[in-house]
Image (cartoon, rainbow, N blue to C red; front, side):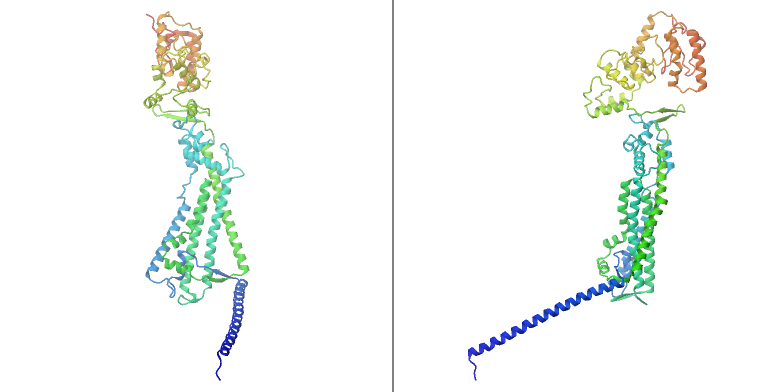
Length: 602
């Protein structure tokens, strides 16, 4: 019986409804099964991890290093086969080994930082530190410059001054301290740097140890192969052990070289920079791996599955104890054998560089073969005061009167700066007039004698006229100092000692018009002349004790016999100059005082 159209539609709708119910039922059941499976998978993963933890399984990753190629190269199912792979691997391994060995030798042998010996410091002190050529503008010796608080920035001190500063900072010393201090900043920084370097090396050595354990855990076979699990032959095992032994030797050598370099560095900044640079040397094999190795080989090693070795709790504790013990032992040995010895060495170097008297210089005259010594001071000289003055003012507009000669020509500057006192006096007038030039000259003379140049006058400085160093004063105050007076003491009344040629000519003119008769031996000027004789001669010559004794007899004869004694002793004993003719560098003719005895009367 045919079904009508409305009935057919109802049947189809009923079938569709039943189909939808079945689909919903299947969807619910599938979701529950998927959740159950996922939960089961997670539980299995957690159980595996828990089981691995409980059993102490430790993953060991293949190191990203040139040396790791030896583990897998030549395996049948690896990516490392063929002549090219062998050739590249061998070359890179040799280059890495040679580079690290050479750097280790350079670190240990001191190629990177030559050591300064006590003998070097002693040679510097004896050969340079007291050479008169190295006096600074303040008149300080090179030893004083180098050993002062600003040694590294003073005069000619240079490297010696910088070294002394570094030693003081390292040992925590002041510039005049020569005993070991309790707190030594350099020692603290050095020990910390050695600790950091030791930890870097211990991390590397611990990685070697893990890899060696992994090699022994891997299964053995007649031939090395990699089918799911890596299997090593006995020959490959011994090759790998030999390579890791070589790496250990190189690493320990680098450790010793780094400690030696750190322990022999005085600069704290350089010590920190060295500490940062040493790990780069240690990881050269990794740098070659990342920079030079063919990408195919590099990616294959990176995708290599980690090995798993058994690690018990006791094993872990023993290994931790051994690592800590080794680091502590390295620190103790480094301090006692390297750092402490270096501290004592640099303290000895400072004693050699700065110990004893610093404030003197010596000069040797090769012509006379005599050596002279000069005690130096710490007071500022005229040159230093000129520098301080002109640092903050214009040389073209100095204060008046200025103790410094202002020149506009470079040629004039060099000529006049090297001109001798004799040449200056030959060109000078007989000053003591209130002119700007005379006032400036007097101010410079006062400054040279460490007197207040702003209030100085010739009368204020008259008592200094007979001092050996008062050359400029005698040129500025020729009348007050007796250069123009024929009957004044003849000592220093020459151009070489500051008396101007004009003043000396004035004295000669005056002598020609006064009565031609010898000075009486009781005259105070005559007595003072011979009291000043030995001090004046001592400033010009080096006198021995015997010579001084002989000269005392000459003084007695001259003072007791007067001008007539010139007939028995016509020559000055020390210089050989004739008394009546004078000495161009020390005294003018005594004929001004004894014209008759000298045969000058007409």
